[in-house]
Length: 86
Image: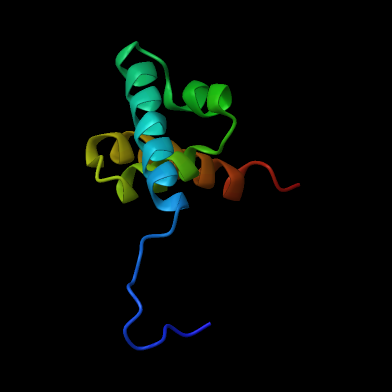
């Protein structure tokens, strides 16, 4: 539905909720990593793939965490290409 001339553009009601959820997600990941958890174990505990966490951290501006999970995701992709196809 197009916005009519003169209508105010308001934020979507879920925008703040999504931002809040993202902030909690980043804090949870940071807490687990700083506690010594391996990226694979963090992904398993949260219930998402390592690559998904890496992308989410990049989007949240957490480049240090994104790189940690990106390295692990790269190992997973290399292992999948070479070892799991028989």
